[in-house]
Image 1 (cartoon, rainbow, N blue to C red):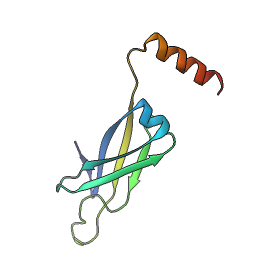
Image 2: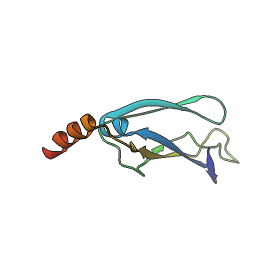
Image 3: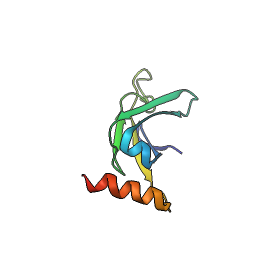
Image 4: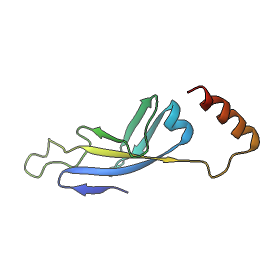
Length: 96
């Protein structure tokens, strides 16, 4: 779930299309069990990376200092739309 690069950690978080378009408020469980809050208002692009300062691994020589956590967002697109959903999306995106 986490990948280490020196003192930094990397992880991926999946977002629904709704979360990617409208924003989200969620948390992930860190390696030591504490929860890291992730939130954003507005749109999130697929592959967007958020840097969370101080949520990485402790520095080897300075345990009170920590690396960073890099969260890459993956957007899950629906595999199928009902005819009603298609109509709503068509109407919504024709005004953009």
